[in-house]
Image (cartoon, rainbow, N blue to C red):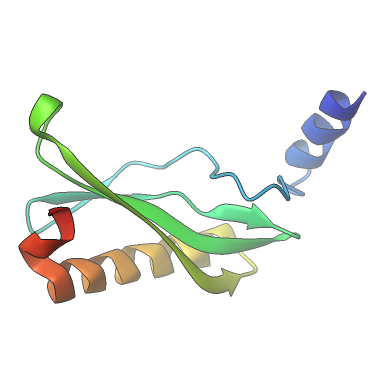
Length: 98
């Protein structure tokens, strides 16, 4: 029964309150990195979360991040996630993947 209720909530935008990431959109490329916005549904709002990936295949390195910022719309949180990821890349550079 819980599975059916979760499906209905997701259908109408209620999302999951478990904090798990939703399906990622197409990545954005910035300074040889791919940025994936993976906002987390939380109490009818969205938390900034994503991944930064550099490289491909077995040499790929990944950095996941979750921030305290909360937004009411998915579009807003995805834009904020991209801004935050670019800031992380600019501030940490190569040290991000060590």
